[in-house]
Length: 321
Image 1: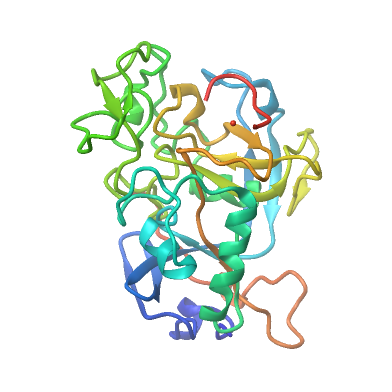
Image 2: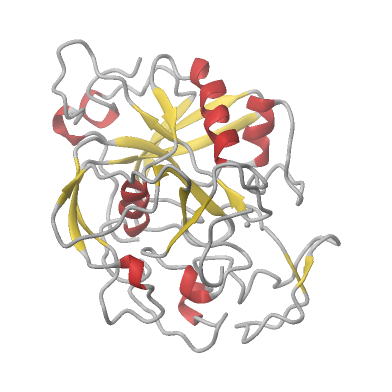
């Protein structure tokens, strides 16, 4: 199991790490399964403001009221969505439409995402692979910021036209830019695009800028399943480690390559039935360090773990994607 506390405090990586280091975003580790390697970043415990403000352009009512959320456990999070390479190495097959080992896996149901985590477990030396909760996902996406997107710039000029998204995300406004495949979806009729394009689909992971915590494609490319039943109904009351309770659906976050601009924000929420698959629906790997005997119940590593550097549809659905 992971040495306790994690790497920054001890100088030792998790036992399952095949690579590790530190860069301008902070500490990272790598997990290798077969020919596939996934880099992960440490997401420290802490408190943030969840949801969107009443004045945020493009917001939906289920994103409020804003409320304080405290997460008591740190965890590792993949710096990209799970790629087809990693899915194939673990599951032995590739369900994706846009087949390319460097693209995110898609057409994966929540049930299949959970099965993937179970299959990955033996590679993690006692630590727990899982989907992040909705609150964990939003904290990681925001990376210490509190605006619609982590750069702080945000203006909607059309249904699929938010210029500040272009450096950060593949969404309906730009996902067909110089599209490199013949099997793209016809995007010629999409309205109010930021850039002109006629075919679109997923893109290779990691081509857009990372957020301040070194995470790529948190916005756009594919929706990412969260572990929660949901969606949780927000109140103004402060929450500690919140999770949803609805049995019939599961939360997804981040927006996708075909999404309207307003869906590609840190606070935007969506949900699907657990068995639903879609050509823009994938997942991101979280790894929970196992607590040693006698550890505090909160699961917070002494010293806070590695701290990233700052700076740098059979579906239940609503609205447009």
